[in-house]
Length: 327
Image 1 (cartoon, helix red, strand yellow):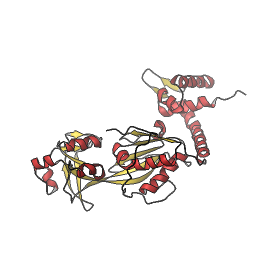
Image 2 (image 1 turned 45 degrees about the vertical axis):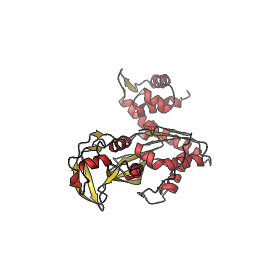
Image 3 (image 1 turned 90 degrees about the vertical axis):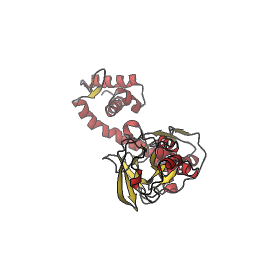
Image 4 (image 1 turned 180 degrees about the vertical axis):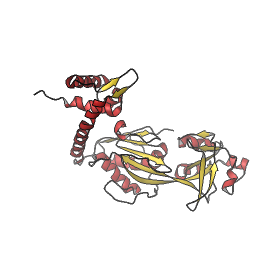
């Protein structure tokens, strides 16, 4: 009986999951030419076409989809078994890949990540900035943090709400001198605004109850909170920002919190992870640190979800962090 090359089958599954030979090769950790050759060998061996190829796209065939649905769960189970074997080791090492919005990473995760690295010298951490909810499987992340003012879209990933972020209104002293100090939310009508991408109105809350909605047409509309913060300090408009993120500029006198009796709707931060029974040791170690430092529940239970963050310790950077946390 001919020996089955299961690596070709695994690469076939990865190409199907990635939707292209380029991404499939990255997921399988092989060169693109090797991925193409593996699929071609498998097609020849089976006598069926697994993918329709054009110069612009790769599309799985009906027969290919049928085979993928039967084979892929077995590779998923094997990866879980491998992860379990690694996780029983007391030593946490390897690379932990995390995706996070800039504001969450810079203001809320840094202390926990640095503590994690000090506890586990053999561990590396890669932190990528993204404001969209990533596909953890296709993009190879172990954990992803997602920030939203509503809730998560339907997802096959396991999730926990870990942070409630308070948002308030801020402006520079120069802009306040020019416009006058607002006393009620309606006084902000006509002010230039600096908003998140897609902002059309801002909710105004008093004691947790919505009391007004302010229509906005931001002069600057961006997910990048650092850019909104800098534009606000330059007097370009009033910004809705996390109170934690704007705190240093307020202390330095470059920003003033407007309408201190009011807030805006809170942002909810969730941590996402693949919905699997077995958890890699690095992920388990990070969740343990989050639970210790921030009161974040780990996947096995623990502190209550949604706890407000306390102050994080100020610590020096660690050379084992490969981070894209730049404005």
